[in-house]
Every structure is written in structure tokens, then in C-alpha cells.
Length: 406
Image (cartoon, rainbow, N blue to C red; front, side, top):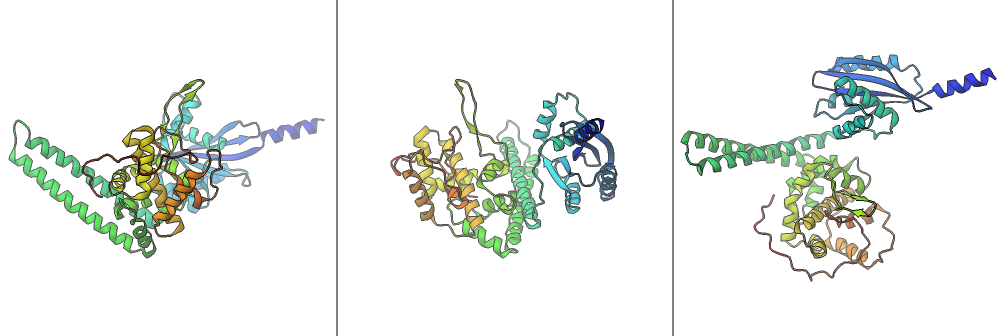
């Protein structure tokens, strides 16, 4: 009897998983390692501070090996995304074949709040990340392809320069229309604007050169640019931010990553507004803003019909443009994944087939069927595919004014 009780106790205490939490800063890393057993009890078995350097990573790996007494028990490493300071550490342990997960800061913050932890410091954060990794099955991190990582750096640098240029132009405009003007200040601002324009042009040339260095990538981008409203810059920015879609297996992941997924606000009899989450990559939504206007202005058939249908439904132009943005993203995804040329008739036929289906019909199951049809979820509307649509061409498109091409 006693032996049976002891074996039961040992099974309960048996370690199911090791989890390492890393709070990374520019100079050092706070580490905590914990275990979880069959009763879901989490126990911290060690903490350590190491330098955020290659030698520090080696020391951290040795420390993890000593604390991991049962090598057969799985181990995961969980860290928070902190700008670029976590990248070298995550890449090192990925290359050493550890299971690495990178958590968004807001997700880690909400998790610690759910535990009732009111204080905040690096050690507490490391322990919280370790517990999070022990209790949950987090998505494994995969490094971005080197080509797309460089392209992402270039497109983000371009955006930064454009923002600086816009600020300088605004400052010059305010200075010239103010009560008192100074020639020296105006000269400095004009020189700064000219300098930024030269840098913007140089970055654009470098983006084109980098894209041309990969023939396959250049061909795919050229094919996608056949969609009216898109340019090499807008497509390359989207492709760079998603790493060439290598880590996306479905359009739903992409929609969520870009923040176009629809969230509900309902409780009991109360039904609030639904809207896009915006919990995702804002750079994608930003770069697709003007192409959506251009596509409708240039009367791209697929996108114009989407705009007309959604606008006829709720009468709010910006909601319809958000739907066009999402549709553009999914069209880019479809054409890139299938490595095919843009055929507007193919997309229009899919839309017409979808309109003819009854509302109770089942959703398409294959990725090729689904991806082109998505995009009709607008800000404030549920993303339902099977619904009747007003006939195309009955809604007149209002003028949107002058539009700037990317």
C-alpha cells in the first residue's frame, strides 16, 4: 500500500515541462527557469543575470543545462519582443535547436496582470514569462529570411525618412506663415528638406536594386503590380513585413497579423459595434491606405465592386476603403503564394459565384478558393462570405478628390 502511495506521489511531482523566461535589455538578460508538474503547479527553480552578448548566451546555455536535471523533459524558452535587443539571443538559441517563443509586450503585460502581480521589474517579468511558457503552448518562433530582413530594414528606413520630411515641410509652412519669420531658420529647414529628399531617392534606388538581386522575387512583385493602385514600393513593403509569407499557412493568420480581423462587442442583450482589431502590424495597414484609394479611383473592377457593395450597405466611405485594403492584402497573398499572374476575370468570377450561393452554404475549404474571396469584412461588419450582394454598377462612386500615387 505504501509503495503504491509513494508511486502516486512521485507521479504527481513528476516534471512535465521546463520553461525559461528571459527579460532582455540592451546590456543584460534576466533569466528564470521553472517547472510544471501533473497538478499544474509551477515552481521557480533558478534565476540568473547574464550579459546580452555572445559569451553571455553561452553562459546562459550552460546554466540552463545544469538546471535541467531531466534532459528527456521538454524545455521551451519564452522572451518578450524588446525592439531589436532580443534578436541576437533568440537567433542563438534557435540555432542551438531550442524551442523559442517571442511574446508581444502587451500580451505579456496582460498575463502578469491576470496573475494579480502589481509590481513590475525585470526579475518579476522573467519569472512571469517562464510561468507563461510553462502553462501555455506558445507558437514557436522562426527567424526571417535574410533577404526579406534586409528589405524590411530598407522599407522601414524609407518610411522614417518620409515622416521626417513631412515634419520638416510642416515646420517650414508654419514658419513662413507665422507672425515673424527668420531667413536663417527658413534656409535651414529648406536645406533639411532637400537633404531628406536626396536620402529618400537613394533609399528607393536601393530598394529596387535589392529586389532586382532576386529574380524570382522581382518577377512576383511585377506580376502583383498589375493590380491598379499598387506599386513596387507598396508591394515590397507588405512582402517585407510578412517575410515573404513564409510563416503564414492560411489567410486568417495574415488577416490577424495585419490587424484586419473583426472583433465583437456583445454581452447578453447588448450588441455593440464590431470593428477591426488593429492589433497587428500597423505598417501594413499604413502602406495599403493610399493604394486602396487609387484602386477605387482607377476603377479596378474587383476592388471597385467591393467598394460599391459595402458602401451601399452602410454608407460610410472609410469602412469601404478598409475593406478594399484588406482585399488588396489578400490578393497580394494569393498571387504570391500561387506564383501566378493577376487575372481580374478569375477574381470577378469567384465573387459572382459567391453571390449566387445561398446564405446557409458552406465556406470554401481550400486556401486557393478562400483567399481571393476574403476582404469583404469591413470595419463595423462581420466577415461573412455567404450573403447576397446588390447588383454591381447600381451604386454611384462619389468623388474622393485628388489622390497621390505611391
